[in-house]
Image: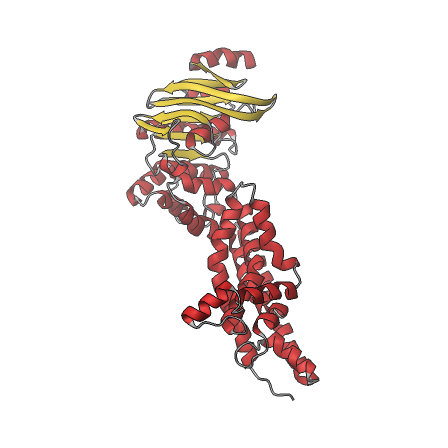
Length: 227
Length: 222
């Protein structure tokens, strides 16, 4: 049996964990804002959020590369002042993944907030509470299935990311060669046995994650329904 | 004293009309707001609470809640509000619903005792009946010791026996807490027994009556 090198998987999980954690902090207030606002700019913001879903990963990857390369103002500033290189580095991968997976965190959270009884939110304001307290103590605990879906799907989606990762991170062993890139590399070198093994691991992982989410949501719905 | 002088465009049964309300209510008065569906009763309550924007002035006692210079947000207005669907916080127990508003444990326990739901303190609110939810919503609305209590058809989900019991409890609490209370209702008999003053919302304006006017209306309806 072909030997498994675990580093690409560990890199993938590290990347997915960091992306999910960062996106949770950014997307949570943004999704809350989108769910509460009546601004005429809301469709524009929603369209920008959903762009990574419809854009080819190569297009997004190309723009990310432009943004993060040392020729861009941001890349140049970070490199000259802090000696941070974003293109073809793990840090750059995390930033690119945050853009790529943004809609997968925002959309379930926004849907969850919009499905809440608006009177419940108003009751919290009338209780003298501000937006942040209402979000953390009333809104979030009442959208648990959406919350779990957002975090888990973002994590799983980042693990399975390929196009953007390859364009922004390249294929540097122990640095940016995540599992999906490793599989591509193995196929290119015609190491089909290991490619099949790696693919099988990712397939099982993705399936297990989705089953866990659906089980949780089913259990939650049954519990709420029986009350 | 509650002073209201507001205008608000609403989509009513006869198309868009402007709801114009100018009224003064003495402290401690119980007002029942009546009128056809879509006449603007709920909108009036929501405007007073700050949940909907309107133009004009709203003042409670010496405190200006809204005028041409400032508009207080709902959280800045010390108002108790009972929603038609009660809008309890589903993730909390009965007692937690009350303590979320104000961490005054003694007040929470005394309200739960007054409303005879102290045994339900630790129950999740999702498991309660309509009548129990209504009492929790009322108790929660009083946790800030509001000067003004607004109730939007609080009995709509209750059966007739529960309605009578709940009506008595509300009047008792209204007196004990000394609130000025505005309650939306469709029930003439309920209004007769509870109200010091009755407002009819008709064609975007309110017409004030004493409860004795309702006797005639009640006879006509029978």
